[in-house]
Image (tube, rainbow, N blue to C red):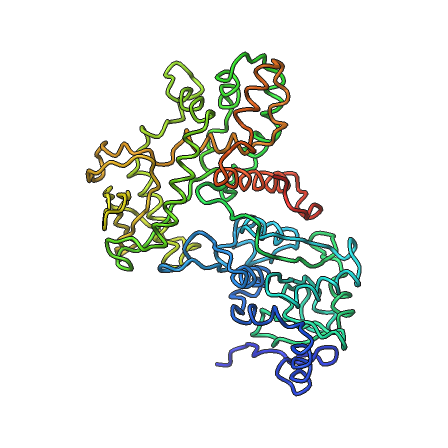
Length: 503
């Protein structure tokens, strides 16, 4: 039986010049001599083919993030931390991208969420001379890369909207090198810059907006180490609206007299599933990959998380939050716990299941993962500080996998306690520090409606970002930028507002 299928496409030339042609080799050598191929080497080292027909945006972004050596802070497969298309899902579900692709604005937001510094421009907010300047800037260094969003049909290619990185520039010919991530369709190729500009100027029918380009570079500060906001659960819209819109209004309406009353107002109406909105980041690993020891990198990452946790717990705001959560008389705290009451093995069981799914490469799989048992242990070697590790046994159908979760902790307990025991009192991340970090991340104008001037001054002192230790300050500013990004999403402004979120 005959089977329909396509094996590549013939690259329309002109306007394009294929990368492997004799003419291209001359262009390539001349551009190298002019110093406008500096970004090529990094990009070609991490060049990847999109794994799905509609994943051009995700493939372009993961390729650039890896070329910039931005650490995703979480594992891809095995022990490796690496950006992959499957990890870029904070602004749009992978299933949606798989069927519809991703818009320019959402890809910009994904780059922000991944911790990159992003400058984005639609063609109606820029011009070809500025575009040429940015192409030359990125092509003359290896610390900045440019992703173009363009309409293939203008280049006489099949298809419409597409994303790919620009891998170099030939100044004399005024041509840009497109490192096409759909390598199953077209090879890398040079195109005249003016035609590429025309291709970016077409309107994306899905958004009604012009296409454009984005410059991506390393951030001045590292992204969050211990806490992150999540929009994977559908409740995030309500939680984001509550924090950014409702809390300031509630504080303006209520006649609060002290810090505890301020916190009560905030917590009283917290959406019931807010715990799906802010998470503490756990690291998981396959036990067979590493055995019973921790690598130097794992120790270093865990030490940073523990320092962030310690700094949160030393803030004045943390003491007020903990006092409120421990108050059995306060009805607003019935669904919140202080950390000592939270069941670490239960937390770990969920994390280990999710971790096993990711490590196996089945993050989108409908298969059910179940953690049969957990055991809290403390690893200590060569005089190092003991490290809390929760060992889980995860089953999926007929297979079984042993997964470890590394737990940042501000207080260690040296006993081993399997599931069901209550001896693991160590202060792992819990509601009190998570809520403290979230309150610190709220915009300063959140509290401006408090009528009592003395109380307002006290609150500003408790939430002042400038007075925080550097590590915690960076963590809080990262959460604040995420909040502003989610507010854009909630207000459907993600296609109009491409700038860096406020911090």
